Length: 275
Image (cartoon, rainbow, N blue to C red; front, top):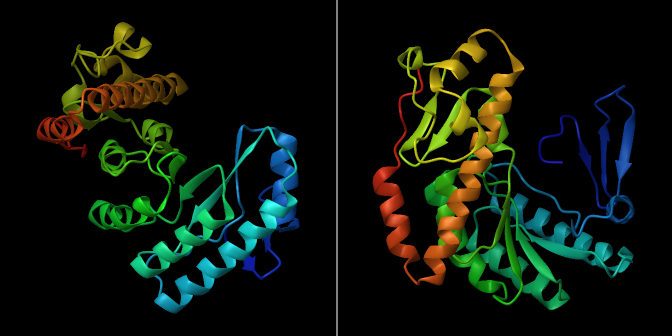
């Protein structure tokens, strides 16, 4: 709902225009559960309201309280025992609201908990602050999930606070703009410096893209408007994040995650993206 134009939020649910044809649709917590049960996902999400950033304390509080009421309605409507329904912590950037929301959701006893309302323009420093006082309110024996984050630096920040799961369109969205990741930073392959660069995106990467194509060739694909360029960039970005998380898990198992995170940030830098 956060990004839908012209949405109308009420206690009962949300009314919005369907992007194909413009028909008005009314979505309630109960209808959301019905749809997600039919989809059959292993993990489904309670219906919540994510406020814009910045938001006043009053606005965030009203939204958070509605999110809790909707969570109760979702829990009552959810029927499938083979699906894990996660509650979603809201409260914008306010510590008292985040803690209050988290405690209320824990009392409802969901099998897992999500932290929503981040990556909405607040920046890494404020995200780190919110996670520092929110994650600890959620039980460590249950899955803890931050919604909508996917930048490498965001992931390492969240993992450091004990978060287990993430989802985001960033890897493929950046790929469509020719922005790719490496363990030395990110780069935009349409930059002129890559016109004759025969190295793979990341020389240490074993993904299909890096084993078969050069930066120069992928740059050529973008210049020519060939969809293959986006596909190859997306394959690499997703593979990069999978490898990043594998290294995080290994560092945690070896009890050296803080050192690994520091080492990562020492190497990782933004390579100029301008043409």
